[in-house]
Length: 397
Image (cartoon, rainbow, N blue to C red; front, side, top):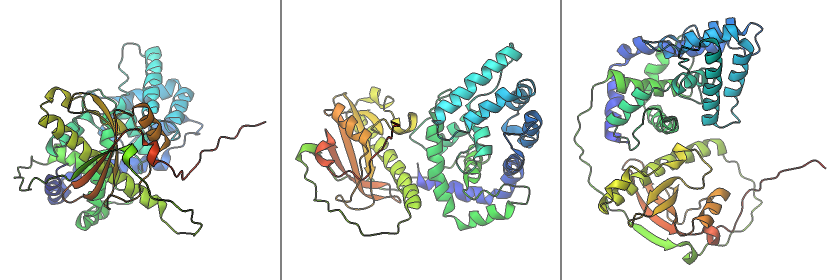
């Protein structure tokens, strides 16, 4: 993400705030209406659904796009089936992509039974709208074309591909990074606060504001033409085998501490996302320098494409064209700052020991997007000696 361009667009957004707001304020009103009326246990589910979605406007109906019109008909004919689909969709204990796919598959079954020759229009864009209306503090309104244009204008590394569900994971990650930048602009926050009236949802987490900004960049604001004045920086890089590393002794301490783990977790995730984007850029430049141009588009940001749990963040290639698996760990601190490895990361490093790399970014600077890099290759068993948590599965009998 080009920070210079981002700052330009934030300023343009503020200058055009009133004009954009006149067209887009309905989104806050749509969420407020939904929050005030949604009751999944309502005796008359069809009527409740109609009222809850009555202010969504072109979020769910525009041009030749009619997901609301079709959803209402499904609810009229099959209220209990649709009710259960929403229960499943709103179950935050389950994987997001699986919930989206299951909702789409099952709603299409209902559509084919009721209206065989009609489109359902229940695509990921519409399903994300349902999720935002229910959980506006967790999700962001999504449109493919909006993300595509924003990616182009902000010079993002990820280029969304039409029809790919993983676009949503990348979009959400970018939204979280953009939201942080917007939250630092007090002038913008004041403009935003002043527009919220009693019939609008109070967007405390700034998720709707974030999407509104992204949509404004894609739709309402002119292309930025800026000259990059930054100087290329030299990366201090060290390569080591995991078996050559030695770790410091760790002593158990029972001293009590008061720590804001929730906020620390949010900040660490944001820093981790920035680090992963840094590594993506690093890998692209590495393959360019090795003249392996045919492999650049095959680099995968796996943690965004598939989610967490694979045991690595990025799938790339070494300078010989061999596939490698990269786990990124980022800190603003020094090289010897403590970091944590999950069990899945450890187990993956054992399986892919010859092709597994832990990229330890340290001295990371957000303002310049620079870092020093320690690359640790191989099985991480040698450096994973101090477990901090244990998973317990209790069985009856």
